[in-house]
Length: 58
Image (cartoon, rainbow, N blue to C red):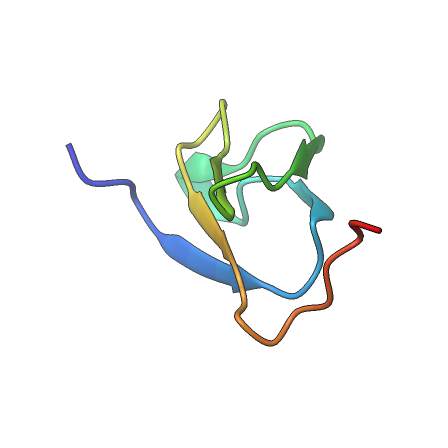
């Protein structure tokens, strides 16, 4: 099953609220995993860390 939407993000930590309409949900804070992606557990949006994003890793 394909995720409803793929969103490119510029930071490793961010919040998802599902957007407007039927996918809206309480705000949940997400953290990009080691593979550079994370899926929202509420709405299934697929987030991908931008190749130009600065990593928080030291």
